[in-house]
Length: 145
Image 1 (tube, rainbow, N blue to C red):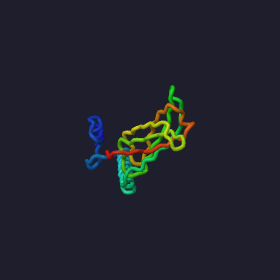
Image 2 (image 1 turned 60 degrees about the vertical axis):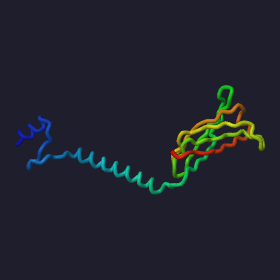
Image 3 (image 1 turned 45 degrees about the horizontal axis):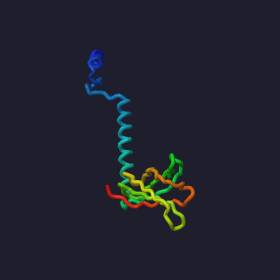
Image 4 (image 1 turned 90 degrees about the vertical axis):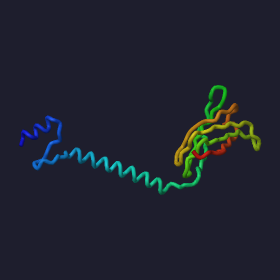
């Protein structure tokens, strides 16, 4: 019987139990169990997201994170957040430097995609320093991907 097991191992075949059936090592059982847990966890997370996430339109907001000099111009780093249920594509954001009710300068940026529940970052360039004026941001629109 020992000769049969040595021959199985030497030939690359799976070791056999006393009754001739293939034996499965503990490591194989542990690996299979971990794989099953990862699979079920992934399905659970995706199912939870699908059930709890709203199906409404994108709800995109824009905020200024910081303003830095960029050569002879100024760059306003902005962050978009989509708290809605759907992705917005080709999202256009407008920034205006305001002096009272008058717009001194306008800059526009377009974001390819802002997925639901995500943040995207970008920037708006201005000739004037946005820190010296009121900077108004508006999300102008999007298309459904």
